Length: 350
Image (cartoon, rainbow, N blue to C red; front, side):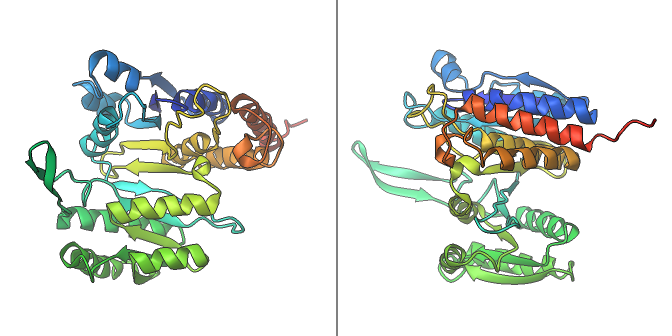
């Protein structure tokens, strides 16, 4: 298991190194034979060399480091986020990471809602342009572009994953009444693919209605599939229902190649960077998602138990109600993780 680690900018450079000891401990305990390499792609390199993704980056990752742990991207010295687009969108499109999985567990619930977002097309496809009069844009156009092939393979993967994991319900979120062409494409493919999975009960909702109902009562929802823009918006609502962006993580996957990127979904938070109070919970959850993806479910479950227990202590960071730092919180996680692993170790025979 060879992992590319990209801490990125701001608090990414604090929370990612903080969670690597947990990954190392789990690798040693479960015999995962993992290794990682840290890459310096981010704002500092962009400012020094104007390099986001180096020319050979995609080939290197695909061949040698198909599993990627990313911290956060964003720096006030680069207000247009040029380096962030180059790195993050370059990875998504270049490695065809068209499935984004962002589970979230609303407060008061013991079951995560499985949200899947198409990750490479739609309004984020980069198709469009501007017509300027003088120095100011007079017309600005962004095109929503979807190919049937991408929608089919995305929905087929999501529905198969939901069915195989024992989910019973799935909701397609769309806006076909106002965006009829891509909306109807999604509806048509969803209905056709759903017929392949008789154990799943499907329904469809307009995105505005869905968000309203999700905030009022998330309990009816089990699995959710959505296009790129709608999934982006829904996932942040899901993070709010969990308790904040500091708790949420995502996986971006290409099922055909196995390439996958895991990241906390919070930003680089320059306002608190360097103060030692950044919450590493989401970065550790990204590690758990990575272990899930690689088939190491017991290791992922052990990490999640340690995280949940540590988050209820005073060692947690201030956003979780504690008085701890990034370091004290992860020290508490490591203590509880070591205990979990020791308790699970079988007793030697007499």
